[in-house]
Image (cartoon, one colour):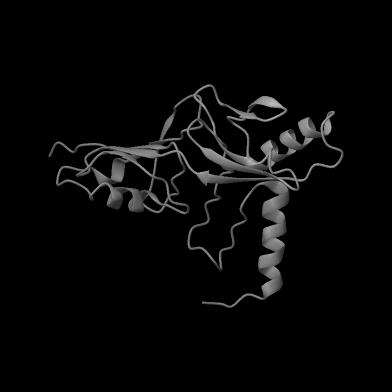
Length: 187
């Protein structure tokens, strides 16, 4: 494996923090697919830290209505936002009459689960682990059954409002809230 200088990782981190995306490098990953920006949704648990304001900091779960309730600012619609977008919104609301220079940090503590259905030994809901692929998800589900049609698997993104299923390969990335379907073969 080719060694990269330390400043490469620093630059990659700055790009990720500023844009909300995770850059890909062909020397680091075999796959050339870009990891989509993660959007928050119902069931995610986030930790909000407001520097110097312990009463405003804490862990909050995004409710079924897609919002979280933070002291002083109240309910904030957070479903569909990236973590960076939510940080900016909380900062903006705290600046509006509450704090002069709020410094807000938000991180996802617990992701919502993903689902695997169809021809796996234990279909159901599973806890998401960062960097998970479709093949990892199948392994969590106990592996394929003998009737599984492995080349016809589909995935529906949890944040996709159209719920459009698309074909996937075993190395494709799984995100929280995704629904993976493994169809049955008939012959």
